[in-house]
Image (tube, rainbow, N blue to C red; front, side, top):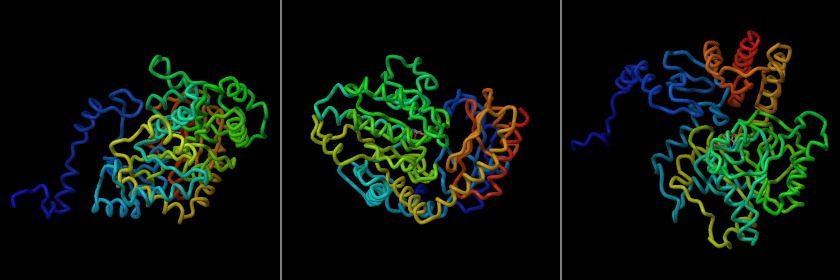
Length: 446
Ligand SMILES: *Cc1c(COP(=O)(O)O)cnc(C)c1O
């Protein structure tokens, strides 16, 4: 045999190491800056090359180590390079990396489906596995619209969303993001016009103010005949402003949805899997949505995967509608590697002690970030679960600030007037203190 592509003897480890060392980072970075888009950035925005990650540490190409305060955008809750997750993906890789989900099924999808049915509220039992959070939101919107179509109410096809929301980057998901920060005017005519209620005014930890729901109540009553669903991030709004609101607001929304015949979609893509101190953020209010979106931490940050879960009633109605099915089915639906990572991640979570980890992180963040309240540059500090937010008075300059954090040995990614931290649950108190000290230090110099 002369075929080397499938050779049984790979290059020896030292040869592979030499090859990776010989990477010319100056040249590669120049290529990146010339040719690669990064999220919400122009071509050429500054980037730092990462060559490895382990636990809560990212290793840069120049050898520096950064303590990760971002969990790669809410995802890497168990830290990087986790032996159990590595093992699960490797084991699945030996069986098959992928197979189509149309007409076929496989163990990892079934194992994951079981866990999602068990872990979500009892009424939620029909699972759609999709590629990313944005797609999970698209699927949720289709479920709601197809449900009302099937029920003979086709006029109910709009959505009521909250200002300050973030639900993803595809068009239906964009349409329910905050219209100002989401720059809807750039896409007018393409982004459907939805109904927007103000950002919930009542803070998570403040006494409940009944007036906080008044405008929402008026809007849902006025638009009920054209509303398919309300969509919101329960309790914690993420990328649209890192804002935590009162559980009673969510209970009132649930009651108003029931009273006016409007479905409730809970987008828990950021908040799911314990980040806010409860397994789902909806649990703070004991609310069950009609449709639930999960993503981000679903695979422990290993692969892109998301899920949209709904009730038997909604699924049955869609099945009896004109199409006879849910009108969605991505090529890589229920990718077995991603499902295997998700199963391993969920098992780590449910057999581990995330409740203690998250509450310990929250208490430390409250203590150490709370000290920033006295700084001239700081307008507000808020903490919920393992999320800490420092809001500044003036807009921040991302590039300069990120560089200062990197110099301080931490990875943080501020935006707007927000410096925030949501570390892997496994972070040690010492490493978390390095993160909070870097924030305090950088902000005290402003
Ligand atoms: C990140 C996020 C999304 C989008 O998920 P992607 O995987 O980036 O498409 C949707 N909703 C919320 C609340 C998110 O935080």
